[in-house]
Structures are given as C-alpha cells and as structure tokens.
Length: 216
Image 1 (cartoon, rainbow, N blue to C red):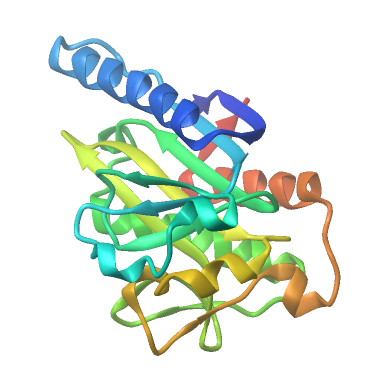
Image 2: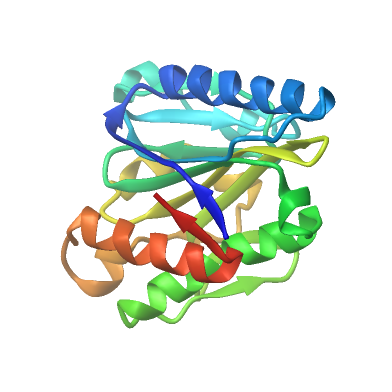
C-alpha cells in the first residue's frame, strides 16, 4: 500500500506554503521524467487570511482591496476562480503522481470530494456535489472548494473545507465566481466551533480509505 507522508502546519502565510508546494511539485515532475519513483506528500494546514485567484478567474470578483480587511492576495495557477483561505479552514494539498493510483484527473477530483463528503457525514452534515459547480455543497452553500493543478499527472493545490472559518471574508468576493450561491461552514451548520484536530483526523481516515493509501 502507498505510504503518503503528512506535513501539518498550523496557521501559516499562504506564500510560504505555496513555495513549499511548488518545490515538491517541481521535484516530483523531475523525478517522473527521469524515471525515478515520485515521493508523495500530503500537506494539511490553515492560512493567514488570503484571497487567491485561479488562472481562469476574474479580478473583478474581488470586490475590495484585500488590505482593508487584513488579507493578502495571490494570483495562482490552479483551476477555478476566486476564493478565501483563513484560520479555521482545513486546507489540503496532495502532491503526488496519480498514475500510481491508476486513476485519471476526473476520478481524482471525485475521490477528493468524496473524502470531504464522508468526513462531513461523520459530523452528521449531509453534503453533496452540485452539477456544474465543483466542490462540496450543503444546500445552496459551498462548504468546501476544490481547485487543482495537474501536469504529467502530478498534482498540486487542492481543497479547502470551512470548519470554523470567519465567513464574513467571503462577503468581499464573488466566491468561485458564482453570484447566485452562498458559502457555509461546519460551525455555522452545527451551531458552534469544532476541534480542528478532530476534523483533520476524520478526514485523514476517509482520505486513506478512498485512495487506498496510508497517511504517515
């Protein structure tokens, strides 16, 4: 069974984790091109407040200067439009070669979403996918955003699950470019904050089961 080392960061600046991701991603591509085994890594973290805009996003979906609300800003090479990352949000970045999983990109995203859906079910939250709108939803509210980059079947970027996230930050953007939909969190649905480590541990187990790997 594939062993996937876990790198866990507490609340960290977005750009520092991005640089770490990029270094792993570039090494993985170089190793694959050289015929060497690719070492997978799973990063789980929280970020200081930041708005990130994907490569297909529209700058006008950011409705103010991020500095006015104490947030950073980054234009990055993942798919999708604009979203927010901040404390109380579980952000997950797998860097690995999905060829070794014998799945394609669509199945990879499906599995990623499924791990989130099953995690939420553990906390008695019924979540689902929404046709034409990537991510995980509870009713009309997005609870987890998914945005990835894939090159030579090596992945980076990933998923952000709103656990105890301050949702007011989302009022300053058009989240994911979808003006007719809202955003929610586990805390909002359950009426109180959760222990982040409890959520991380449940997610790790569901991630392991769905991808048939061991997170170490």
